[in-house]
Image (cartoon, rainbow, N blue to C red; front, top):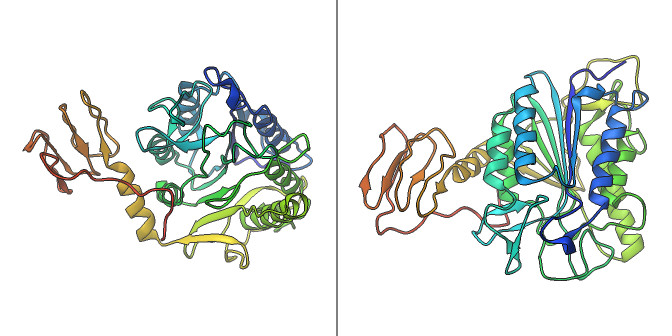
Length: 363
């Protein structure tokens, strides 16, 4: 039996064209391993032609944007989408958060502006995904000075986990979004000594039904998370005496969905979506209002000196400083140069700049 609604995109940025000291080959191995278990009919049962893997040179900025656009074009409302990223993550010299790509450049210890996958670009692509069930798994943090972690020996680039504000905004990009990150803010994602990173090994084991229980023939997103949390936390404590806690971000009141078949199940029942997020773990529940607010903040985009980009449905204008917010108006240099809709009006002529939240999200 196939998990016919399953569709997946696995990304592993293992090599870097311009910054070879950032190379972490295990990232590509992680992406390939997750793809293999998803396609295996004895485990997850995803149709092979609905599982895409992008790693190394093809995992450039343009390559990842194209892969995400393809995912949005192909995924239907009834699909279950699993999106996995393994690589580096950090802030750019423009203040935005980035997932790094094969062609990322580092400038003064930060991602050079526009040389990776910007958080707002990821949000924009996920808003275009029509699927009502989407699980995003991100392993994007290391400490450069620690050899067993996901990263190089040179402490010249400070990786940062996916910020809480970004994870919260992701929940508002569509129905049924769940985000799992490899560690909490201020923690480190450890590689370990195996063929896969500790986080990905736990993920593959969970998808194989090890440490998870079948929910009427399916693997539940919440059960998979509990396995990830327990396995990774215990392994890091035992091996390194440190703490790494995978974090789950979900809307308040939202239950899980089926991620895959459980051990190639041939008899399926009605999946129980009424489970509550597990207690005693690193669960971050976000109110729908807060998630929408976070997404609106990301829709507020400040253009470069000679152009403006739209991140929403609002009007847009060329000029020194152009801003678009949702369906709002655009004011440039103290005067209105765009069409006025019913949304908020933004004026940057001599006023203070609007900024997004930093790495943490209290809501």
